[in-house]
Figure 1: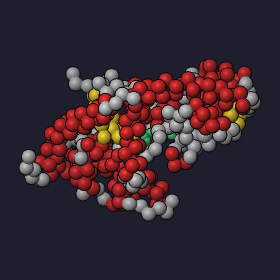
Figure 2: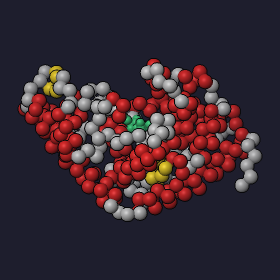
Figure 3: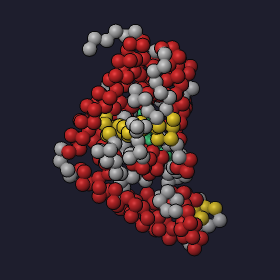
Figure 4: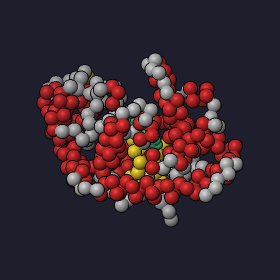
Length: 317
Ligand code: TYM
């Protein structure tokens, strides 16, 4: 029997952090044997906020290395660039034509951007529909993401459903895969870990960065346990040994931070090494991505032909 299909992506807008890892990336690795996994670099989505060519290029190459560094195996998972499958922009346009403006105005990400009083570009507004296209074009079964993407997945399902209703059964409706324990990983200040809040611990942090970021964790405490330190520590240590450690070191914030630093170093070190090996592997990484893009274009082609036929778009092959 064919494997079920898993699709997910990350935006190349800066270094991924522990929130990205535990909320999503780790699931990509854990599930790569079980699913036909299609993991992409969401570079078209990044264009909504990055307008510097070299920055986008660098972030894109880095994210591919990050995917390999965490242990995605290109023989099992397909690692590709979103822009190498331009069908998704065509599909997003079709979705835009069947979606109302008031519906999109209810999206949290859009409302957040609006309250920050930013000049919002049309890409930000239409963002959830490009994401719907990313997912639906594959007939994905599951989409592992963190909680902040929950609404986007609901929009994807609504959009697929609407298309099916208007044009006939075409798309499978995907299930989100959000792990409750790590749905929202907190940052060094206790808020959601996020590049835009400046509270991250980078996934491939150097030892010095690990030390600095752990030392910057805000130590509000409850009964002698520094809650933010504990919350981050619980990502990488089992509950039993963690509770013992925090019990024995009640009130000793500096020692607990030291312990977290040591554990993070042992956790991050091997991934950093593997990433470095890939980085030094010459053209291999480029070849992997080029081949994956080619494969994905072929895979989505028949779905797009079906979409064109159903919508009345005459297509000359
Ligand atoms: P992005 O790049 O913002 O984040 C990548 C993944 O990391 C998760 N995440 C978190 N999870 C738990 N705790 C946190 N503090 C935390 N911060 C981030 C996100 O939920 C996400 O799963 N729109 C997407 C990229 C995308 C996509 C897609 C994802 C484009 N098309 C199709 C899935 C399917 C994004 O910007 O993720």
